[in-house]
Image (cartoon, rainbow, N blue to C red):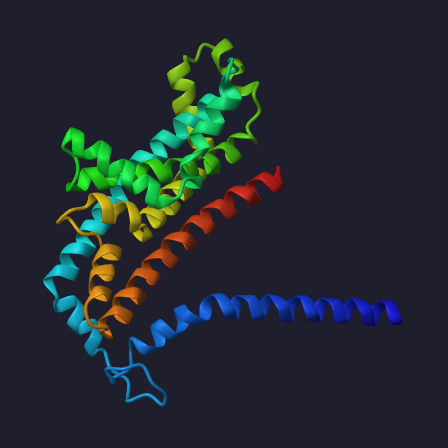
Length: 269
């Protein structure tokens, strides 16, 4: 009886602790969303009334609309290029054995561990020399550097479940390497590739440090929010933050669903 009571108490404590941690993490985000619908200019309780005026003001602001379009273009371009690079890096690690492979994987996984400020300064210096600084493609190039390792990790985990004998068997049956890649590898890794697209798009959409250094006049939405914060504090920031959070949540949830399907298919096997 005492053992059962102890398990119940431990379970209750763990659930309560988990709820407390999530409340601590998401309380600032929740307050931003809540006050984005507040009619009052300053965040205060009780509410001054429900209003969409700050969202209307944001959508009517041409600088915000332009930065949103820039963010969507950068996120889409970064996701496609980073996922392609991540797939090729993961496939090389899966298929080939060569001297220095450990160093290759370490270097491929390194960018997210470098402080964004250092990456931003390095990107500004390098892209300034080759004429990419201040362009959308320059921002995409910077985001690809930090996004590709995430795509590589997701796709490599999926490739771990693929029998290494399948490709040689297909080759022995007359299928060429490219046909095998197209009809065996790509269909098998499709869920992880789609998950990588969404997660890298989310990372790119939220990133602001590298974009702040290299964007110039081509501001992304996080950079625009930072510029708005440098002036007077406006409730429009809550509305912009809520929109960014909503887009990020949608992308991450889609990535989780696709990754979950991959995991479910693996368990069924």
